[in-house]
Length: 255
Image (tube, rainbow, N blue to C red):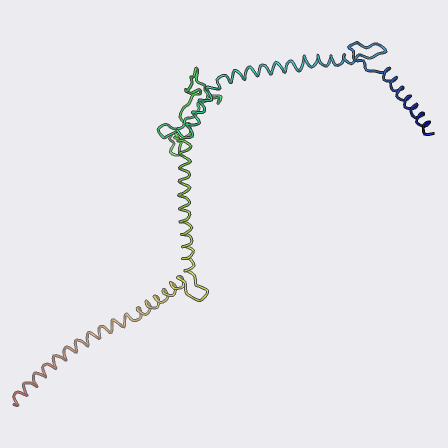
């Protein structure tokens, strides 16, 4: 029974594959370049060859022509690149460390359209572009003079170091000012600050001035009375001297 089942299964698969083969044979793809007829379509190569001709005439060939033209132009533009590379290297080194106040940085001259002005028949080491002084002005309206990048880097580092020093000084000064400000205020433990001391001393000064204003007239009167008393004392002293003389004279006569 098991063998019979396999025989019928093999028969069914054989018929299926045979049918598939017949269908493929009768409906196979025509890979030729033959034109179609009323009952048969064009060969597969007909459409593909037409597509190839269309691309070759309108796309690939014009693109190839543009590529070749651009390549020739690029080769022409870069023909002097070895000489220009050496010149640009010299200019970069000059900007980095060679520019001085006597030989400052230059600027590329440009035409009315803003394009650089090339130098005709330039040789190795010569300027390939027309160079001139800087067009910018300084604060005083004079032509700007720029030195090398290394110079400004050194100046920047020097100024930055000086700024750090002055910043430390400002920090110390601010701390000192803060401490002095704290001394102006009264402390929580009741100690008087400078402001309170100044107000206290000002009040005492005002009281002294009031006392002086009140006592000054009395002092003048006392001074006058003192002068009178001194004059009286002088007269009494003269009188005492006269009496002492009379007494001494009487004592001598009595002896």
